[in-house]
Image (tube, rainbow, N blue to C red):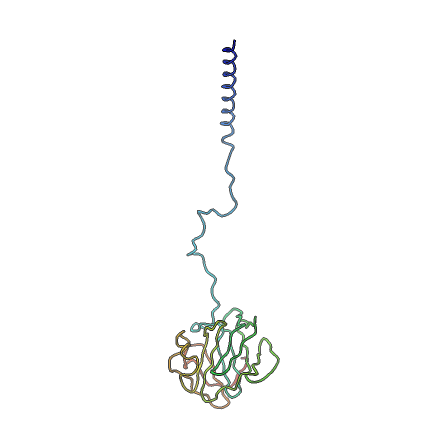
Length: 214
């Protein structure tokens, strides 16, 4: 009697297992792996071929989009020009000579293709187009130099006049912003030194009538 009962149980178990297997086979085709809507890791773009954002550029010969554009030795002012198509943040940048330094305020920006005049040795109301450096001593009319230095100490532009070997010449030569021993001929009284953006040496500087802001 026990043997018959055991056989009946085995038969029932076998029938149940067969039924489950048949059901699994029937739904196998309906089961799929969920697909992600994100990028396929196998098709990510090559980092070496993705275009990189360009650095705003000004004159092709210059390290900086903003350059020293005009210097009035007798009038004690100078003009910076943003020759690029992008606004330039020069907050923290310095205009320096051998004895003096002026730092542009934090966040100061020069619009694209715009100019800012820095008045030396006089006070006034600072605006986006004019800044005042009352503690900056008078520029040497006969000979001297000026440097535009980025926050952190990197020289970005340079000019010297009257003679060579002035402050910052070595740094300017090292970064390709000036030629060793080169200098601009001191302009006649009433004229200013004007930069045309064609080279990083005295050939790109010319004496002209003052044109502040233009």
